[in-house]
Length: 481
Image (spheres, rainbow, N blue to C red):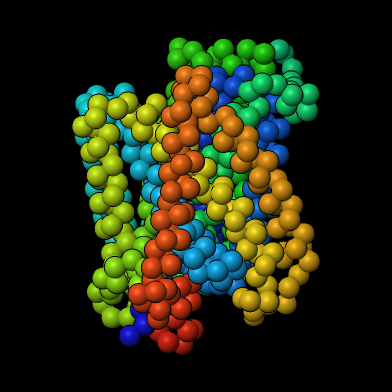
C-alpha cells in the first residue's frame, strides 16, 4: 500500500509563508541585526544582506529546479539521490535532519530566555510550554499551521515597516546616511562574521521544497523560495540601514552592544509604547511560528525517508488510510528529539542563548548552506536523469555554476569565522566541532546506504524514488489559503 501526503492542500501563498516564517523576520530584527552590529562592527551590513541574498537566491535556482522535478518531501535527500547517487542522498538526508533539528531546537532556548526575562521563571519551563504547543499543532493538518503563520508573519512585516519609518524619519545626523551601502565598508576584519550572520538569517527559506508533494502547483516551489529570498533580502537590508540611520552608522555598534541601548525597541518606541508592546509580542510569536515551520519540514523528512525504509517504516504509517494530512510519526519524533536536547541543556546548566541557541543555530545554518551548494552540484549533473523537463541554460547550467562558486566563498567565510560567532577563545578547537558533526553525519549516512546495498538491495534501489504516482492516492480537494 502506498502512503502519500495529502496533495493539493498548499497554495503558492502558503509555500511562501512557510519559507518566510521559518526565517523569522522579527527574530532577525531583534536578534540577528543587533548582534551582528555589536559583534562585527561592520557598518556596511545592509549591503552585506543584499550580497548574501543574491548568493542564496542563485543557489536556490538549482535547488528548486531539482525539488519540483524530483517531487520528494525530503528535498535534499531526494535531490542528491537522483542527481549524485543513492549514497549521497542518504548522506544528505542525515545532514538535513541534523541541521533542521539543530535550528528548530535552538529556538527553544531563545524563546525560554526571552519569556523568563519578561515574565520570570526558569527558561526551560517556558521552553517546555512551547514544546507542547508546537507538538500539538504539528500533528494537525497543514492548513491550521498555515493560518497561524500568515497572521504572525503579516504583523511582523508591518512592525518592521514601522521600525524602518521610525528610524529614517528621525536620523541621528539630521539626514539619512547611505554609509550602510558603501562597498568600502566591506573591507574590514569583521566581514566574515557579518556574512555568517546574514547566511543564518536566510536559513529556512528553502522550506517550500519539502512541501512539493502537497503543493497545488509544483512550479510555485521555485517562485516561493526565490521570491522569499528576494523579499526578505530587501526587508533585512532596509531594516539594517534604518537602524544605522536612527543611531548613526559610526555609533550603531556601540549602541547595539549596550543592553541599555534597547535596540530595536528604542527606535520603535518613537512611534509610541503600543508599537513596542506589539513588537515584543510578535517577537515571541515569530519564534514559535519559526519553530512550527521547521517542525513541519523535519516531520516530512522523517515521513518520506521512513516511507522508503531508510528510517523505521512505522514512522510513515498512516492512521487514517493511505493519505496523510499530517505526518504524525515524523512530528512526534521531532518533538521527542527537541525534548531530549532541551532537557540535556537544562540539566547541564548551559546558557539558553549563548550556548544552546548560538551553537545549534550556527550548526544548522552551516549544514543547510552545505546542502544548498550540494543541490546546485546535483542540478549540474541531473537534467537528463530526472527527466520530465527540457533542460534550460539558466536553471540547469549557469545558475548552479554561479551558485556553487558563490556558495563555496560564503561557506569558507562562515567556517573561517565560526570561532568568533561562538565566542570561542583564539586557538580553541571547539569551533571545529560543528563542521565535524556535519561531516560525521554525512559519513554515517553514506555507510548506512552501503550497508543497505548489501543487506536490503530492494530498499537501496528505491532511495529517493519512493514518491507515489500521481493517481495512486486520491487527492484531498480542500485547498488551503
